[in-house]
Image (cartoon, rainbow, N blue to C red; front, side):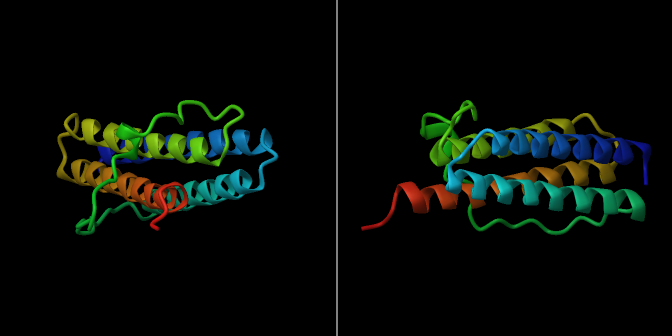
Length: 151
């Protein structure tokens, strides 16, 4: 594993731990059952990401998978207001906040890709960016089902 890739994975681990801590902190501040359930699911999702990244560090190799998302985004982070703060937020704002966080993480890895030389590190950035977009889409679909139900 190149040093670039190792550093990238370590940075990604830090980012996942920070997200997990943020959701854990929000969990301690809410009494809303639906919000608590969503935050617990987000914490578990971040834990899953951490496991994948830590396994990559142990294995020392990364074999990128082909990425072909069926849908990129509902663009809720662009068109729906709110979700800028989790303090005292309800389910709708927590979902929007998480959607925006996933978009931000995807953009982070996308921009980071241009700073690397090795193909391996660039492929990892592409993979991580796509994973974050996949998580964002999952949250957007939940949001869409809850707050824009079909008649």
